[in-house]
Image (spheres, rainbow, N blue to C red):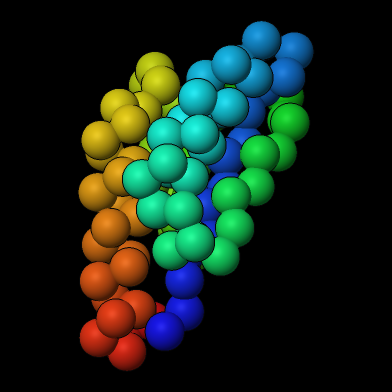
Length: 88
């Protein structure tokens, strides 16, 4: 079973580091070793994008605002379930 990889790209210049860290903490608390990685990537241009296994599940530019933690948790949970069925 392949464990999901989460990437959080955030605008460092905008001061979004707190939101990125909070989301990473929530995911690690929820899934722990069930994740292969949680990468926090300082970026620019007002970015706050979250991807799971390379698929964007939230983009500030596309979706507006910051994601709800529950939305990201469900996206990760779906990837965990998909991996468990061998469908990754």
